[in-house]
Image (cartoon, rainbow, N blue to C red; front, side, top):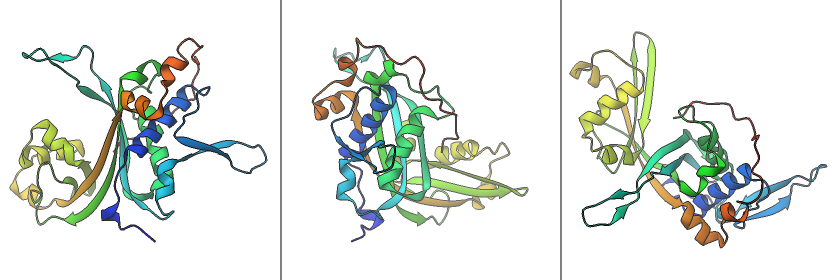
Length: 256
């Protein structure tokens, strides 16, 4: 049976799969343990991975999604109490606002966000132990009555507007405004600029914006947690081996 979009949930297994894909892309000699390797049955006998989370979903399960890679800051931030806090900086984020089949889309965006976010260089093997991945499934889309008809920390927003026959659109995921400490006004103004509009923002302009709100189911996993789930540290297991000096060529693409 089909799973309603609003009941779809991101899982740790999805994040684990993202790390499996990243590790084997950067270090082909390592094969992740969370994914089974089966033969496609084609003439060249190529191997393909099947993620464990796929087995829990019907083939038709689909929704918009984003995959985000963050990198741990070094050194750690120290508090007056003497405790250290792990802080992460964005390393890549790409997704889609159109529904996509999850059994293929998680793989696609795990790799494109790591290697094809035009704001960053492709992820390097030496960075892997410092990474954290997040999978966000976007659900519960609703039309807003106005561009401030949403709740900070609960909703992500998509805005669309037209000025001088030029179409603009942009989105922020639900956590963005909360993490930045923005009000709805600050978030909308920032999103308008993200869309590429540089003109004056006033009440008349805001009234013409079409706004859609949505929520997300999000899971995060650090590399350390991935190692615990896997039972082996890929970075340590191949550290003394020769790391490929020439990786697959990944052309930049637009992030959303």
